[in-house]
Every structure is written in structure tokens, then in C-alpha cells.
Length: 194
Image (cartoon, rainbow, N blue to C red; front, side, top):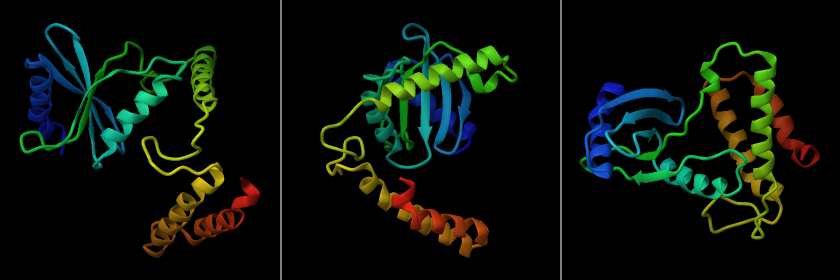
């Protein structure tokens, strides 16, 4: 669905979960996983970010990830106000989240070296904070039931699935045989690489 097709559903989401019509709704970003909108409300919370997902179930997965990662993040993470499961009235899956003040660094254009360095340092600090967290159960999906004690054992099936996808893409002519050969070599050397 394009922005125009989604607008009535976005307005319905705000009405359902905040009890009032938004003053305005605008597209503010998006990509492979979905589209991100800003809804302006009269009264608190004032602004709400609505992320609409292209693939089923991703909204619940991201909700769980945000809940877990926000406990360990060096940077403030948005509060998820509501997760919406598609239904007959609003047939899209979405998260309605807190709008955090800040600047979209990707939309700033050319930044001076000092500013780029500061942004990079903050991102790295946040990643380090997340990667210092240990789960005694091992490695697995957030909210999952199965865990592996070794991350390499956990990731190997994903690497195999990615190789199989690459083989399909190559057969369709969407990637070259040279790229597929590199992927085969990397998979063959999995234990050596990791």
C-alpha cells in the first residue's frame, strides 16, 4: 500500500489507541521492512511515530527486541505505546511509538568530520553496550525457545539458508556466478572464518 492508501488506516490507528483523530499524518521514512509516519496529536503525547510493516509478524519481533535492548542501550530507545495486529478494520501491522527528539543523521547531507566522528562514537558505544550483555541460555531469537551455547552453531543454519538463497538468485540471473563462488568458498571455510 502506498502512502495515500495507508492514510485512512493510520488515522484509524491513532483514533483507536489514543481516542482522537490526529491533526496530521506525514511519511517520514521507510525502507525494506516498512514505512514510518509521524502523527501529530492534540494533547499528550503530542507526536506519535507509526511504523507499518511489510512482512507479517515483524512488528511483534521488533517490539520484543526494543523491550530487551532498551534495558542495555547507551542511547535512549523509543517506548512502544501499542503494537497493532492486522484486523478487518485496520489490515496492517504496526507499532505506535514514542517520538524521540533528535536529528535524522541520514538526512543531514554533508557533516563536518567532528560531527561524523561524534555520531560514529555514540553508535559504537551503543553497540558495545548491547554486545556486552550475556544470556545464560545461549544464543537464539529473542522470545524463542531454542538456544545454542555456541553462537557459531546457532548461526550456521542461517548461513546455509543464505547460501541456498544465493544459489536461487544465481539460477535466476540476479547475481553472478563469481559472487556465488565467493559465497560457496566462505561457507566452506565457515569454521576457519568464525
